[in-house]
Image 1: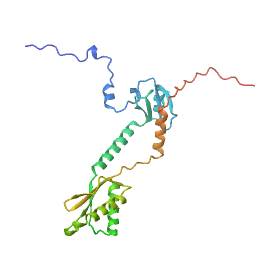
Image 2 (image 1 turned 60 degrees about the vertical axis):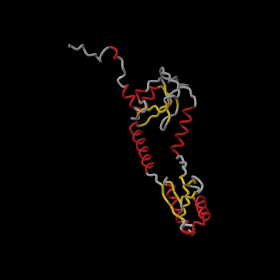
Image 3 (image 1 turned 90 degrees about the vertical axis):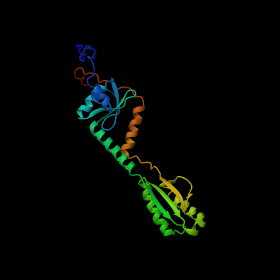
Image 4 (image 1 turned 120 degrees about the horizontal axis):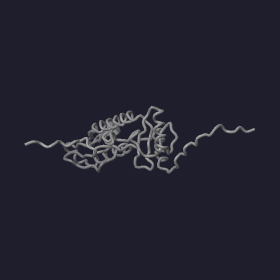
Length: 232
């Protein structure tokens, strides 16, 4: 049975499609000529923060050999930066990879006490626990009771609570000490340390704040007509 003609994918219905449509879908940010709004708000370094005509912003990026990158598309007007886009993506992926690797390294470290642990041994183990917590690991501490030592549960609880006080700055006690068999156990989780913003991050935060403040567009420079008259 003869087959009918195959449908043509080059019909007039496909004319006028944007050749960069697939590329725009793949990119995380719109860049350069993909930005089709009439004006944008520029933020970042080496530029005067403010609202620019998009063509002017593109020209500024081209003069610096960089890219115009849209970082806040929902702002009015959209917020852009002039940066090396490939370098920006590389550094972002590198940082994500480092964070992922660090997350995988998180472990539960164990520290053992006895009801008769002396101060020297206590301090030695506390220093190890502080290092474990600063590295992002949990610390499982327990007091091991042997034979008749099980009669001194209160002493074991005091050791663990004293240990919690010692680690207060770097670790948080997940719950009160509990008995499991002949062990009294307490688990510490690392405290999420707040990263101090460096000067660059503080500047970036100020720039972002300025970007959210409404500003008038920069007026276009009026063409000069002839030379100005000289004053006598």
